[in-house]
Image (cartoon, rainbow, N blue to C red; front, side, top):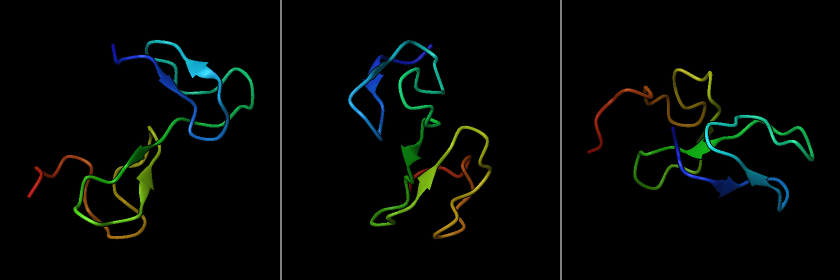
Length: 60
């Protein structure tokens, strides 16, 4: 169970474990963990579309 956070697209709070915003319908995303990469990953993404880094790769 993750922590509560704001939707990346609007100001609605996402509850614990919610992946879809109840207000705007946006799917939750997290920033890529690869240094200065500007990419984001949605919950079902296996790799970053910007840099190709696998979600499960350890941080550098």
